[in-house]
Length: 557
Image (cartoon, rainbow, N blue to C red; front, top):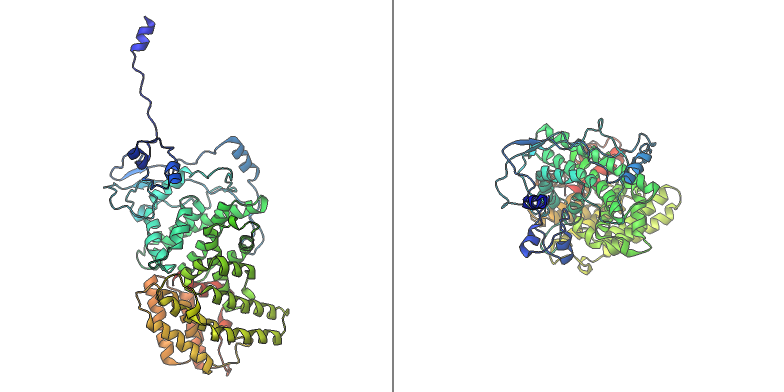
């Protein structure tokens, strides 16, 4: 009887917490429910349509997120506890201070506005993420540095890293900032035309969906650009950008701390390099002066190691892009002073031989020109250090000048058939000639010298021949800066200034340090108080201007 009674009781039907992804449901197959993208779809090369929302969105519902995510297991907990008080790595050139602790995952409040449908979903968010329409001013701030606790972040290299539960929520909540980076910023930071891919969209965005350090660096840069470009001048964007940048720095410190103790996995190397790149871009976007420029030298060892691996297959496409971008920024530092060059010739050779496409689509400079001017700057650094005599250096300069004057842009290989690649190559060729002519004594040759005037005119002619709304035009900022700094002709000064102003308007990057430097050089050249043949712009670049002024050709161009 008891058996009959028991059998008559209808057992509750088991209900899965997570439904299958849209693609697996349509094909009526078992789904592994892996987030952010189903592994079955990934392995079969299918487009994963993602998962439906786990809850219903209502008008202005406020939900409080968990105060802290639990550790995966007790062994990981003990590992974190044992390293709680490790010193910070010396990433900025100072002495190690403080302790490395894991960024808190606290989120004070999550405000969700009602969702009216998913027809207008954007390409920047993977298809597995539902898309609430979040108002930009309702984004939760990252954890406060004063209240956050940090310890080194460890990723199990034996299996793919799982997406932290709070990372998914942050992506949803900050979708507007991610879309701004995807649709606007990434287009300003590279030459994206038919036949090329956007490396920021291809390499940076996927990492932001995997690691909070990259995500926070991206969100900070995006919020900063929205504010400085005038799209929204609310002070809240300044607060968001600074707090996300601080959080990204702590994740970077954790990665570099782990590198010192046990080494990084391939994925972690990408996270570290990508975070450094985004932090430098953030600072230049904000003020034109990079307070994180020291990170370029701080990860020089990592770039060199990846440039000369025992197994070339260990170097991913994303790593090659980051190496190319950071090596370019380092070379621009060397333009303001050869002694500031930090990356080795091996790194530049690797970029020339293996990262040529990344460099070309990034700034428009042919890899062979990048490599050759890098050799000149390296020799200049050796001469300043006393390792190379003036006579030897002058002989090398003469050879380099012959190379650049005889270099034929028609013989170069370009990413696509657009004629503007060749025009950009010409502009960079003459920019390198202007720098070579300022060695070894930057005061000796006046701006009226025929060789100086010829290169300045060539750069301005290229600028006049490229349409203003062309993606290539924005990459002319660095050659334009050199042309403006090396002329004393009033009409050339005016035209260079006007073109630089156009690029500022097009990109939303104000470049205040560049403007201040050019103004100072032009004023002193007019006054000619020192009665010298030339007023070199390099002498006016203060240490804190060294990176920001020149690297602006990369971020905002």
